[in-house]
Length: 323
Picture 1: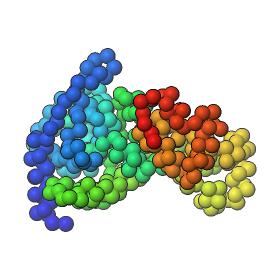
Picture 2: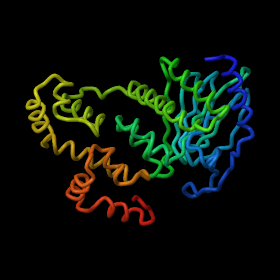
Picture 3: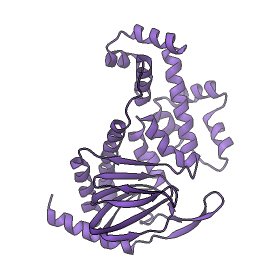
Picture 4: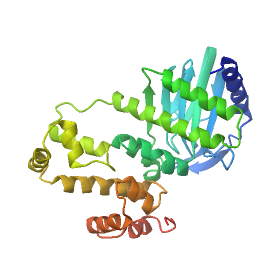
């Protein structure tokens, strides 16, 4: 990777930062009215890479219509997080992840130059393209769905990368691609962002240790949650080095439910979360929770919830078109 090209790219995006259309909209956040950023990139872009480069920055406290991942690429920066009176520090090689409508404001005051690389992703593109990569961790999965079910949930994730070289390389590739875009730039960015999000998911998993005194059945159920669309009893038996019959019997003794009942409950809970919290179609939701046959998904959902997926959607959001 050319140091000269990287320097030029960071400079170009740094100069674009102040010229971007950081348009504020008035939005109701509970009782008061607050400011929110509209999508600042071109309407035909789903991914935007932005760079702040300098020693000073003082944003107004605001919300935004998109997901964002802000990386401290060089130096440290401050932020107001979820409330206008809650300052935090984000140190070099750390990442701050925010949901749509999360309260946020960048704060930079440094004697040295600070570089922040931001990845902004439209909600619809995030749900359709990137959420499946993050769905193996049920905590991450529900975090990224929260903005739709609780518009002002005010949650965020703050991650430190112990081995940041891979993440930095991916960021640099995205910066260079976006600074001097070509016709296929969005297509090139998509797999780079997917790879980056896999690194985020891996680091998040390592940063949140498994609960103490976790039983074997707890570990099995967690493993099922981490592989929602592909898990089988045979896979579980192989992973934990037990016979499938032993796994099946253990789960039934300790939970009172069969393996099939537990798996169905997990899939239906995940399906409802997706129907509530995303703009995915019923068919896309079915595939994400492990159903290759849409008819089987419709039948399982109706039997479990006593209504069809489309009836569920229409009751929650009559204006939503999902097919």
